[in-house]
Image (cartoon, rainbow, N blue to C red; front, side):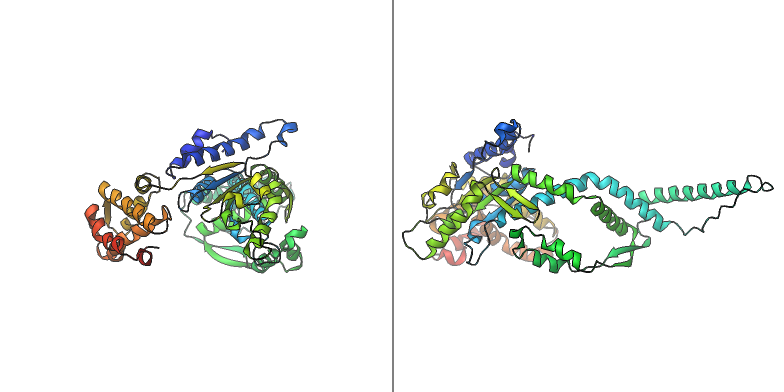
Length: 461
C-alpha cells in the first residue's frame, strides 16, 4: 500500500467496482494520507488526525464491495463490522470496544504471517533435518578406543570412515527427499494431541479482556500440557507437520505483539457498516431511539480517540481510520448525534445504478458475474456463451425490477442470473459437451413471465 498512489489505488478498485468514482477517489486519498502522515516528523505526526469518511447510498451500489477490496489491497489491519451488532451495556449485543479488540487480533495475525513468511526457509531447512533423522537407519553406537601403539592409526581412521559413510548416506537421502522420490514412504512422527484449546478459547472471549487479562494464557498454565503421540504418516505429510512445528517455535510473541499494536494504532482501518441503523434522535425518553443513541455514544469515544484494553495490552484509537456506510433510506446523517457527525468530516454520496452500470457489472470486472457462471458450468463440461444482446437485456430487466419493487442494486443481478440458468444448472451433469449461446430471445423466454407478473415481490427477492 505504501507504494500505491491515489490514482493507482483507484485503478485497482476499478478492476472490481463499476462507477462510484467519487467514493473511490476519497477512499484513495484517505489511504494515501496514512502513508503521508508516517513521513512527517514526530512532533507533527501525532497532531494529524485521520479524516474519517461516511458513505451514503442505497444498498447494492458498492459500499461494502469497496471495503472488501480495500481489505485485500491495503497492507494494514482491516476489519468490517456492522453497527447494528453493537448496543449499550446491559442490552443484548456486543460491546463497542470489541471492534478494536478484533482489529488487534487481525493485526497480530498479519504480523505473525509476515514473520512466518520470512522464517519459512529456515523452518523448511530444520524440518528437512528432522526428516533425515527419521529416514536414516539407526546407527550403532560408536566406541572410540584410546590409541594403541601396536595398532598404529587404524582405529581412528576406521571411525572417520564410518562418519564419512553416514554423511554420504545423509546427502543421498537429502537429494531423493528434495526430488520428491520419498514422499510415499511412511515415517513415524510425534504430533500433539488435541487438548483444551477450544474450551479455553470460549472462556477467553467472555469479557476478561476488559480487565487486561489473557484468560487463555492463564488457563494454559493450569491445564495439563498437550500430550504427544506417535503417528505413521507419509513423508509429504510429515514435512508439512514438522515445518509448522518449526514455524511455531521460531515465532517470538514478545516481538510480534509490539509490532502488531503499532501497526493497528497507525495503519488500522475499521469499516463501520449499517451506521444508519443506529441513527435517530427522537424526543422520546423511551423506545428504540434511546438504544440507538446509546450505541452512538458508546462508539463516539472510540472514534474520537481513546485507549482500549485488549489481551495484548492497551491500544490507542487516535489514528485508526474509520469508514462508515449506510443506506439512510429512513433516517438521515443529521439524525446522528452532532458529536459523531463531526468525527466523519468527509461525506460522499454513492449514486444508484443504471441499466448501463448493470451491463458493465455483468461483463467488465475481473470477477464478473458472467465469468463466474460460465466457469461454474464449465466444471460440468457445459460451455455457455452470453451474447451482447443477452447482457443488455438482463441489465434492462434488472433496472425495471428495481424500479417497480425494492431497489437492491446490483444484488438483483444474482437473482435474475439464477432464474435464467436454473434449468441449465439442473441438467448440466447430463449435458456434458454441449455448447450453448444465450441471446436476448432466450433471456426473454426465461424471464419475461416473471417480470410481467403483477406480484413481483413474490418471485423476485
